[in-house]
Image (cartoon, rainbow, N blue to C red; front, side, top):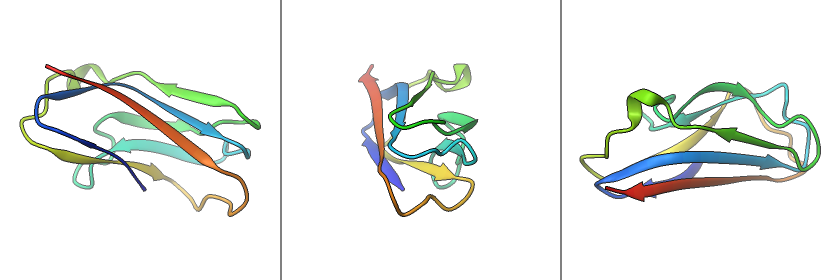
Amino acid sequence: MKIARLGPGCVVKETLIEASADLSAVNFTIGTESEPAKYGAAIAGPAANGAKIVYPPLARKLDANARAEDVFLFPSAAIAGAGAVRTTLRASHR
């Protein structure tokens, strides 16, 4: 699922995932279609109602984007139809 569009010169600072259902059995990566783990390596989802998972930026991706790109949240399995998932991506421009 698409979570953001970053403009040229942007750097991802962190990504927050919140869920109203247990997603601990699902691993998530954050990245682009061509590089699914560009901004976040696989990590288990939130374990409890209202829990939050914070992805710090990967050290290798602290350089600013040369061009605009779409950022996606990639689940390793289907997410239950009940409940909600909210993502917040924080970025800055260099």
